Length: 385
Image 1 (tube, rainbow, N blue to C red):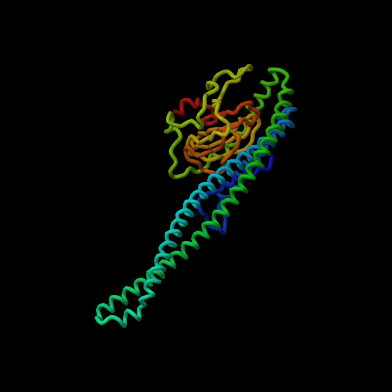
Image 2: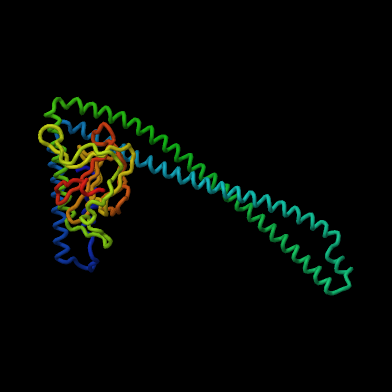
């Protein structure tokens, strides 16, 4: 079993173990039985994976290469998205800092002008200093007013100088933040350029593998056999998942999936490439979902509340994410460019799950989308508005 898939199933099984708090000094019989059932289930999942491996055809080596390349591409695309988000945030922060810098510079210039005016006034007052004014005045009230004016003047001047110093410190601090933000932007842009070069190289490798895979398909019978094997893998995976999630607890604010029938949003804006149940080439195979043609990189969103129960690469489906919605309902999102969620996460309607791609061997970007009830595919058009 691949390391990443073991990690995902480990997370899922750990989630199944979560339950009401119990005494730490001993395990109840119920807990021991639950643990034994989980261990048995884990062995069953590993057996499924071994069966899937033994059922793979002579193309397995090429499929493994395709898996490694597309998983790496998905991670690179996710890194690129993170780089772009960091660059956008840094640019926004830089804009705010520069705006604050301009405001502080204007305050500094204004304060400098006021200080210069105060110094001129002080020089003029110095010709009639406080002691001279005091000695020349005969009226006590006039003397009191003059001294109060002098105190006010000097206090105001000191406050203005203190404010000016604070402005200079703030300007220096902002300048430091600007420098740090500029350095962060440069780092993120360099990393983005490196990631994009890696993506280009990986895409070339992917095209080479796809060409090799295409050359091994010598007839329509070979193509049908491949599709049937891909379908069998997906069905076995779904059966294992159904057994794994049967006892998962739902959140308190959960809205039943069935109550949203006909009102769900499509996971991505795209043109349907087929009709549900239509014939899929020769051999009597039929479409169990809908291909939504969309631009590469478009955001794929959850159609309803649910828990991620699978997020990995699967032959024929590419980067695949499966949501369990409770009460026997699941939704599948295949051929993603990148996956944005991991097993165990709860998501709300509209939560980004991944990005549209062509993983799994497609020649053009599209999202393959299924809804299942008790393991049986149902027409998504009857559920999504």
